[in-house]
Image (cartoon, rainbow over all chains, first blue to last red; front, side, top):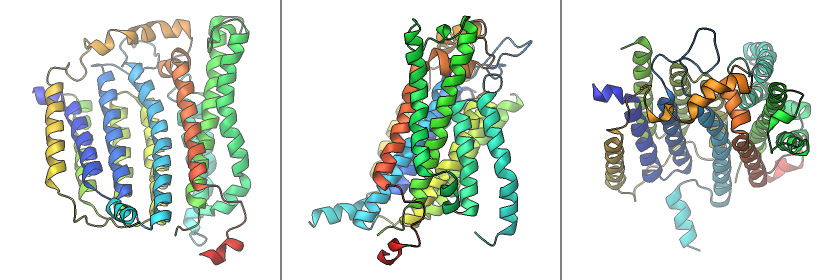
Length: 117
Length: 140
Length: 188
């Protein structure tokens, strides 16, 4: 039962580790960015899970509702999502420039070309 | 994309609705879920849908990158300017209580302006990102 | 176990499966599509967990804009991931397993999911929930915390977005409106 009570956290850890595995083990830069985004989403899930209160409702003042979920993680993650896509765009544009300079987005081939200079 | 009649008709119907919904999310964000960040991305995705179906050139003619550059800077300036205004009125930086005769009115006005600034910056920056990515000629 | 909880478990299980599929898939176009689904599912999870504002943003950003940016990148780079020969597949797996095991060990004594007595809910949040309707005067607490209590934060975040836009334009440049059929064509 303890596993089900912490289910959200376990899944968040699992997603983070899959993201980390993609970043470490794959050589393709676009795939690495996908792994980073997955890691990012897992952190979002972790934060929002922490804000949940049993029987709570959406944190918008409503007649007759006394228990609300914690609004603070929502604020932090809301801004983090938009900032996340902006920074991902910077990373992707760097990949495009790397492709123009080296003709490849595979990390190993980029290293090879660097060494052969 | 010129031959996809169904896509073109549906997009033509959907784009104004999406833009209207973005404006609703922007200005109704104090009472229902929403605000500048959400409205900005929804607005941008509406325009991007238009650009996907009708082509980048037409979209760029309607919303030139130069205008968007100015808009994306002016959103941040609007936000920072509200803070400066409260400073000049005698309060702390971004302390909206000073903006109007009563603190809650001041907060209303301050949040409205700040969210507007966020919405303008997010929408125009997202569109600029899209322009930069798709406008670039094929690499190599 | 409530219906909410059951949906939550199901959606998160879907996300875990998609994550594994992303690892296996070599077709990057497929990865981008799976990522769009992944974001949409996470938006569903956020809705179940009472975070309507966040779900909104994630649905528009994750399933919309970031997918399009990734596809735009793929059209300018390679569509297929090359199999890597030089890398040892076992080492990253060991590193990730150890890190994951330590994190699971670390979560073993944190408060259960949805516990109203958890430390997160004892400190700043009660003040926001109780005082923001009278202090700020607007019903949506997320908006009042975002724009008023944490206005400095949000100013910083907005500046980050603006800066990221400037950085992308510095890296990729901006094409003039009517030039595609003109002089640039012959350089292709």
